[in-house]
Figure (cartoon, rainbow, N blue to C red):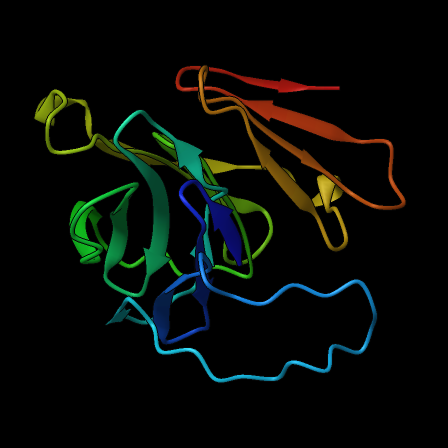
Length: 179
């Protein structure tokens, strides 16, 4: 779920995205609310969702990157005007994983340790030749139980860290650093 500019709320499940207008929604200062009302969505779109990035707020709309079984998709939610939700292909392929970190141009997918797939993709108005992916294999002794993946959207670095370990891996487009 993401609160968007201009009183919009974007909700998603594993099969769809739904956009609501909150401009006329009642507010309350007590919980539970006495105002339970069904709201019709402004827009919706169906797609299988494996992972979603944080929202990226741009001047004309909010963007999200979405990992689906068919690859990485991009969605722009306009801040004003037509609230139509469209998906664009950013990178085709089968990148399903148990642990995923998504960014604006980069993602990391762990299907089975120690194989990490590092993804880089471009939006349609950007250079189309910047799209690639590669596998980075970590040693078996470097197993991290229940890893957390954090993506630095400006540099493409992915930090992989475990909840109980002190190991940390920083991946970039051209290097792997172990801490």
